[in-house]
Length: 610
Ligand code: BG6
Image (cartoon, protein in one colour):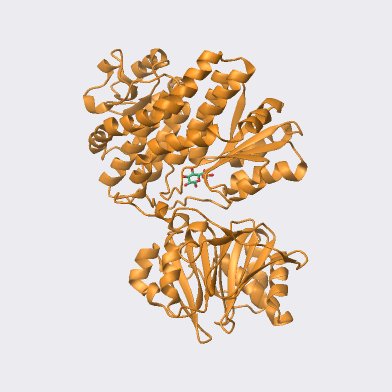
């Protein structure tokens, strides 16, 4: 997955500077390679290379590039290795057309061969180059950019967005066909980008786009057209109130640490948001559905597992969690007009999740409820209703505060639902809701304060560990998976998260002297977890515990360092808090291993490809 930004300006001659500033805000989307095409006096200066935007900028002086228009692209490699030649933007056959894309062109191999056979000079193994050639090809025939773009879309199969310009024209065109795209209208300049934060250094006046739309940007205006029939659409820019500071580290060494420390505020703000939200609608959607699925990927899926336990426990409502890409082959046939898919996605752009949204909409297979953080995302615009997480931008690639917010949303909705359907008494429901409302922010802060130093110390004992397990039982199933996910993502260790009672059915054979296993537990389930701890400790394994301090668990750890104790709280709040020491452990271990936790290798925060 990648990020693109294009700017056409009357007021600037140093376009490289602003392209780098805006492009930097898309770093979370890709850092395999970066390029800038800057146009001045009808000539395109194209510089690109492997690395992050800051690394390539230092090497090639991207921010010093002159011109009054241009395109930058940050790449997360799919088609073609992360090399200089595969970096974007690309030229067409000559140095006239320049452009870049985000997404995947599925008919890459056939179309690339076809272009080469018809005389196109294709230089790279990257599918983004085909977008430029497709327009180049049709422009030769039509001499009209909009028509050429329409025809290019017929040729290019897949889900993508691209931006393209010509050396001799003070304009840029862009296309949205399945990947995110936002545009903005500033003072004598316009901008198009994969995401809002990179628009904001230029303007707050933004237009969100729909799939199947194309744009024509000139310094004074952005015209939006429907690709299908070329009809010009009426789109009025709206003022964005998103806080730009969200994309700054604010004194923290990494975004990840900042975002972990923001969690007490997330807890506070989110409860306000939920109390004032469209509860009636969300709860009725769940109540009215014949069956409910929860579809998500990565950390959002792990949170969804916690959610399924909440809905069962507090509301007696089965909600089946499914990984986005697995949903259709595993459950697709069971959907009908009465089903509900709860689609959980921080970005609201994850393709594996949007595929399910599109399936439901296309075949009229029931309702969709989005749970999302990014306002203006595809998921927000296209689900029947949505619950906002209200976390502010999460910049670091590993999800922390958004996972945390998702678990709070599930606890809240299930407690409300349980009250309505009688699974919980009024008193029980009130106790849970009041704890979420009044105590959770404080408990979250205490968890960070108490486990921060413990996690740092524990991390320092684990730098030689290459392989470990993280086990949960009941509510902490999803928490353990998330802890393992974090360690995998940013420490490059093999850490498997799984159900603790399942461990003895196979993976237990890995345990030898000192083999580390993290057990994540609530006070409610520790009686059972002790059995699973014993299975490991009696074979010489190293027991690491995450949970409230309990006397019966103490003897199992060899030193205090191996007990990440969260503050005392309601057992139903444990699953929300228990993730925090695991986030901190993975963060500090990543630092000890000299890895940048914000930009782990090979990953991207938003994956808009299958
Ligand atoms: C991944 C990100 O690719 O997408 C993960 O690296 C994230 O951090 C996952 O959890 C799902 O993202 P989203 O936006 O759908 O919640």
